[in-house]
Length: 295
Image (tube, rainbow, N blue to C red):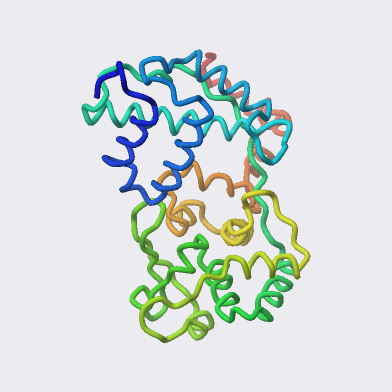
């Protein structure tokens, strides 16, 4: 693809045709890229550079183009936008469709603070299940129970098919990591699953929002359905679960994502009490140990 008459929108379309459409979230990603492109004024690809993106990023952070009237966006939002654009140029270069450099190489992303992950306590789980069970969508309560029992994403549980159900376990397919994963389930949960062929449940997302409201649960933005997954992971660790096992259950490709839940373990970092030099000063002096080398 030549640079002279090629607009950013052309590159985004080409990226989608050759690569993006194969991603599970490809259509949504393209929609976000198209919106970024419009805000940038769809520049010529050869004119798009670090300075242009830096100015865009500043205006974006200050709330420009924000239909919700917020004064300021989160740093994470523009970091994701930067990553999406960077990936377009990187993939097209890899495919031989773009001969120029990547205009976003070398731009540092903003530091992001750790996001608080909401989870439900036992009484909140009870209230939520009660609110789900009075819904006109009779599948709702079962979907929620599947998420709470397996750590499944909402989309994974809601799209379950009979072929994914085996005695004592569920196999989740079409996952975010592109890898199937199998999670054991109890007889109690298995007895609740429909026995019909094909897809087990009808869509219940709107009904779930209503159930949360009936239960009086107010969650951080973007965590409405993920709260069930966070609840599973948090309680798993609080009950003494192994972080590596949790990684497998959740289907995380790296341990980094799973480590968000490590602090819920009852003995998390307890070694700091047993091994720190202040509380152990007497025993250290008694042993007279000077085996360590200075850095």
